[in-house]
Length: 85
Image 1: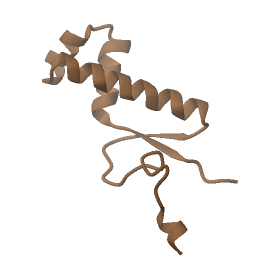
Image 2: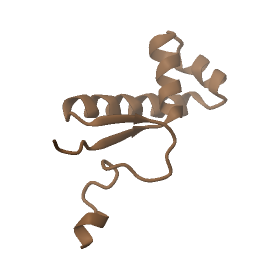
Image 3: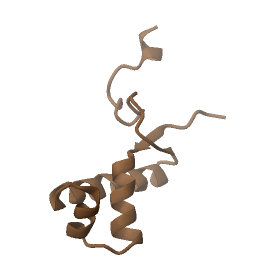
Image 4: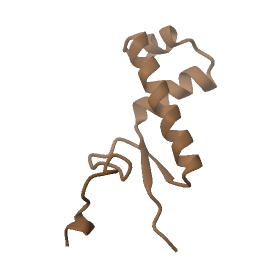
């Protein structure tokens, strides 16, 4: 069985998606709840949706959290530790 590529959905992206898509808030109201601007919510929703759709279409594992290490997707096109050996 192959190892799945992972996609990291940050908690701020998840929260923006939850407020806008699940709770039905507009981006301005979601921004007030999160303590960020409407523009920031817009960027978080956009990046979160792209990550979720990319994970579904590419059959990747979706990891939710604020991990400090980059994901496989962020490393795309860069040399990985296993390729250096």
